[in-house]
Image (spheres, helix red, strand yellow):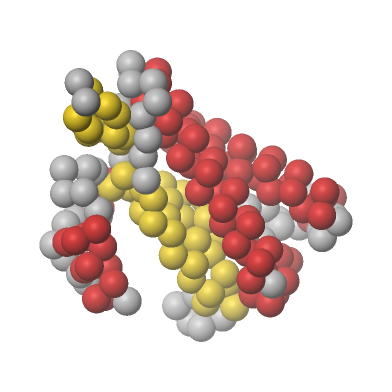
Amino acid sequence: MNATAADLMERVLPPQSGLRQWVLTFPFSWRRRLAQDGALLGRLTRLVVETVLAFYAARAAEQGWPGAKSGAVTVVQRTSSDLRLNPHLHLVVLDGAWHEDGGELAWEALSHLRTSEVGEVLERVVRRMESHLRRSGLFRMDQDDDDPEGNLAASAVSGQALQRGRSG
């Protein structure tokens, strides 16, 4: 794990870009199914990544860089630190976007991410997942409405928390 993190930070992710970690956990009632159904977990992961990257593209367009793109690396962690079943996602996202400027690629950091924006992204993720799961007939989301542990949770951590050149 440490070697992979070091390789990403030192050789893969662009050095001039800020980074932000997004973490998404799933409701307890979903965890066994997601742990057993890798294809479903993969589809939900793809929905999360697409939603976060669409948010970054929209932010870049608002700041005057239409067509700009960001990037992400996602790691699926299947257990919690106490080794309980807990499939959840860690996304390391470039905290900005690349755009073309006179035939060259240029990096633009995006303005400060507000807590309300994290909530808006989460709401989009939840809507997209619910829609997918209902269409697939895999879950009845209304069964989780009264379950305090049946809601998706996400958080964003400041890009400064992810420092380059440190693997631990």
